[in-house]
Image (cartoon, rainbow, N blue to C red; front, side, top):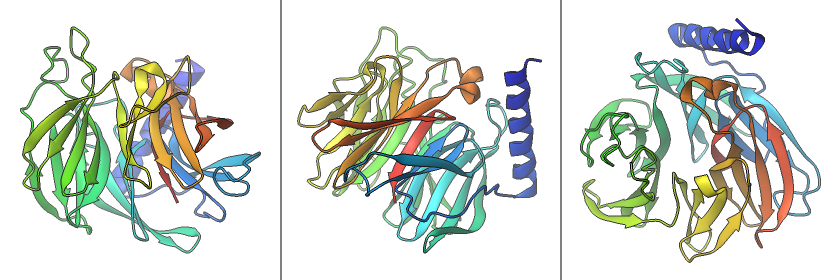
Amino acid sequence: MDRLAAKSALREAMARNAYARGEVRIADPDLTEQTWLVASHRGLFAISADGGPGAGVETASVKTIVYGWFFGLCRHHDVLYVFENCGHRDRTIPMGRIVRFDLAGDRLATPEVIVIGLHTNCHQIAVIDGLLCVLDTANQAILRFTLEGNAVDVQRPFAAAPPYDTSGAYLHINAIAAVGDRTAIMLHNGKAIPAKTSELAWLDRDWRVIERQPLPGYSCHDIVADERGMLWHCDSMAGDIMAADGTRAHVTDTLMTRGLAITRNAIIVGMSSFGPRHLRSKLHGGVVILDRALELRMTMVLDGSPTDIIAL
């Protein structure tokens, strides 16, 4: 076993042990002066930028605050919810879980595992209508829980399809957001042959699809509204970010964009290496910080591929 494979195997063993024990592996709970949180396959990172995001950013720092393989990341008032995949590359075991933290001042506090037994291929989470909504990507479903982690129901607005399907039936749903009185879900569509652009599925309050809106991009991620209500997405295969009004910014020539957050002064975008699923725990990535004129302010290398980003 080579050195990288050995490290990957050790991380997986530690994650499985944490799952079995119900433990949360906090590395550094101090969030003082931290600006953004970045979920990744190699941990939950906190980023601090001098002067605040976009306000004369010249230096920034990054640190690991929780060990694990994370995707969904959601702040609701002073509570943080994250989806953790404790099975890593193994999709045959239900070792996904939801972890809840209190944001107590400038600290990550009182970690609690509130949901276990999820498929390891879940993606984003959001609080909609007072319930925690988890995208079960593998099963093309939305799992709903109370904010304390009690199961409520499963919404199935899309027909089931196996992940190896190439007809377009497997949608790889990966992002969810409440937009007015509707819910938007990103349909990645990356498995379709011939290639198919991504779509936004618009759902009514009863979780029925009322529209599928094609997007001008492939294998897209993220649904993020700015202060005007304009929706932004990552056109991942192009290495771009794009807005509903046609605004577009090119971020990277060699990586895919995934993970997006917007503040009054800045936009932060995740950049991820792309490779076979069995190698993804070994891949690195980074983030770029743009000002609101979409000019590059800073690029940072991370020890893991970003999956989701929020502003603190």
